[in-house]
Image 1: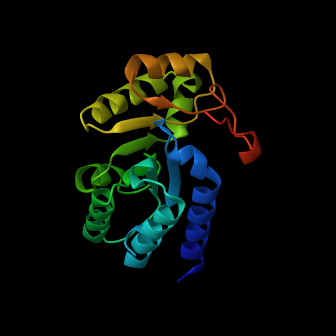
Image 2: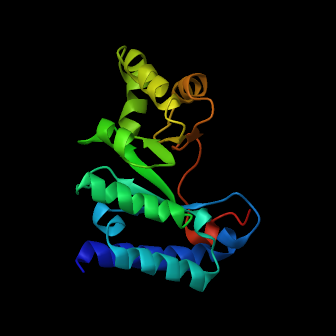
Image 3: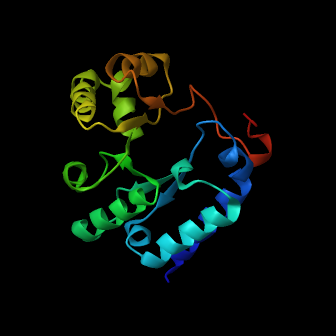
Length: 189
């Protein structure tokens, strides 16, 4: 196993242990974990992930695996592995959509539950007069996919208003909405 795979496993192990109480409560809270295509297509990673969830008493439905779009691998193998993980209850997501290769191909070939729109698109909204006419059709396209949408990088009220108008069901992330916190300061509910 390469260093990246070892690091992913350490992140999974630590995250599940530290967030166990919150992931076992009755809320709709879920944990998103960044993974690479090589993790997703590795059957031993599937077994590891299931074992870690079982050991911590966490339902796989509470875990979202965020596939880094910079990942490259055989798309048929990746699609099959994502489907297997979804059948086990894990949610599958494309992270940083729109920043690298294959992004439109991913939408047509990969079974995903969540699409996370990269912050560079949101910055365009109030940074350039071309921003709104470029970003609005992206939201229109995503609306047809029947996936949950996460919009990262919301830093201004104008950006938040644009997202509310064009993707009212989206989940927003960014400095305007909240800042990272240490695990000790993470809200209990």
